[in-house]
Length: 294
Image (cartoon, rainbow, N blue to C red):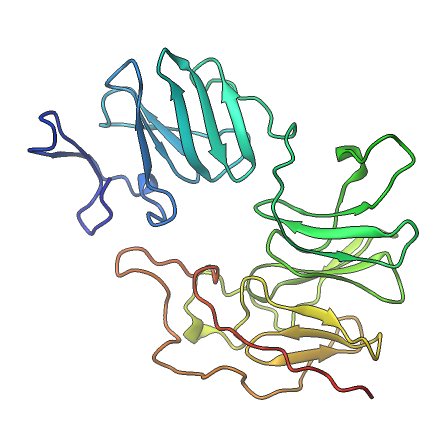
């Protein structure tokens, strides 16, 4: 698999002396630096698997592919039993799943503790609850203890934000949670009345655009936090520090640009071949200013 302007899937039948390009479908090399895994079947030379957001299977030696999904997306690794090509294990952002019929059916990923947490937060409830954003999954909140014998999946519930974000709980109301998502998205969730609304600093999600097109340059997992001195002050940080005193309804800028603001660096991220403006890969790093008491 070659990532270039004329790249694609190549096959050699003479030990690498010569190569023939069989397929140049971009879906096989989407985000090539992140995926690019190809596997030959252990029993049939014409069965080929390519892993990506979905996984792709060819039965004609790579000329054509059909697209499939295991129980979770973002497929990164595959093991095929050398003695039984119907027995496989696939690894993805949800964990790992097993198939005994060549991928027609996969086991669940909910039987393994493979959630990846960036960070955790807690509230002031009793028993207190733990909050975390799960890589490539929802955010969660869960009490740190239950009345049963164990804490199980039934004890979890989704909360504000998405996989990458910081989460903070309103100091005056344990049921109001603020959660970040991509590039400046902020969700305010009131668990008590099941009301959700976005309270972004700026009403725009610039994913897909270069940094030069952003009014405020928010990172993929930008900071969100309450003041330890004033429970009404909610902060969010882009290349500026922003503050709200009305639950995110209105925001004010309280800092200058905290980056170098170098226009030569504020360009579309990625390739000349593959662009990737998700803000995961480029960072306009900022350092939140410490607030003084009072």
